[in-house]
Image (cartoon, helix red, strand yellow):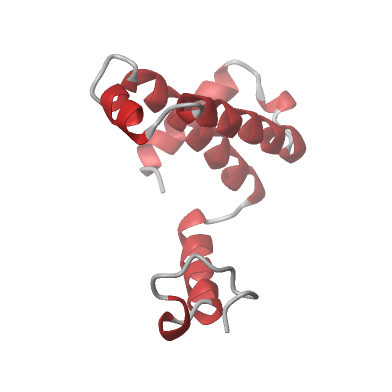
Length: 116
């Protein structure tokens, strides 16, 4: 998902600060959830027009920071658990393709157990 040079930078950043001791999978998953919630705050109570306006304002940087926080914790979690996120995503696409065949779901937001 991220370039190998950037991953090395992230791992070094954490190691240099001796933060690995705090980064067990449970706590990283919690941090990931918290950061995802902070990402949601950027959109909360805003219309699509307001969101579009913010995307071209100085508030865009706040969104980018929140997205980066989510990506950082996801990257740490995948790294620490030995999960190749690219392989995991490819496998999930295959599973979803079987769950959601085009002829049954195209144009529908129904969950796989709701369509007929």
